[in-house]
Length: 113
Length: 123
Image 1: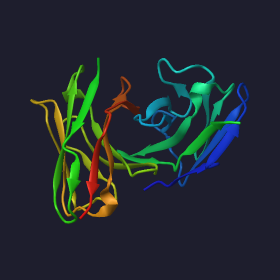
Image 2: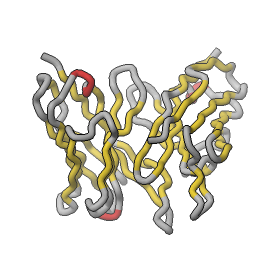
Image 3: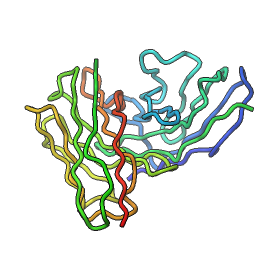
C-alpha cells in the first residue's frame, strides 16, 4: 500500500497569511490513462466528519473557497490556503487512491497565531 | 440531499463481534462505491474497506484484513461492516463515505460522509 507522509504535523499562521501543507507519497499516484494524480485533500473540524476540498491534486470540490489550492504531481503535493481565515482552523489530510485502496496522511493541524 | 447514516456502534468486549450499518438516501445508491474510514480517539484517519457499486470488488486495509467483512444490499440502500475478533485497537469512530467519480468512471474522492458511529472495545 501507498504510504503518505505529511508535513508539518502542525502550524500556526496569522489571519490573512498563507498556510502551506506538504504531502509525499511512497509511490507515484499519477494515473497514466487519464493523466490525473489521484490525490485528494480533506479538512476536518472538531466533532465533524472530513470534508473533501481538493481532488485530482488541484481540482477544487464544488463550493470550496478559492483561497484553497492544490498543486504537485507524481509523489509530491502541496495544499495552500492563500489567506487564512478563522474558519479554516482544522486538521487537513492528504489521501491517495490506488487500485481501489485509499491511504491517508497523518494530518496537519492548522491554528491561528 | 445526499445522506449517509451510520449505526450499530457501541461498547463491546474484546474478542466479540459487531455489525455496523450505513444507510444511504438522496442519490442512486446502486451507482456508487462506499468506503469505511475509521478514526481512533485523538488520532488520524485510517481507511478500512471499500465495496464497489455492485458488490463485486471489495478491498480491506491491512489492519482489519481477515477480521472484517463488508457487504451491501442495494435493495435496502445499505452497506454493512461485520467486525469480528475485536480488540482495543479497533476502538474508533467509524465513518462511511460515498466515492464520487467522473463521467469516465475515474475516482474523484469521498464527497459525502456520514456523522460516524463510535465503537468502543473494552472489558
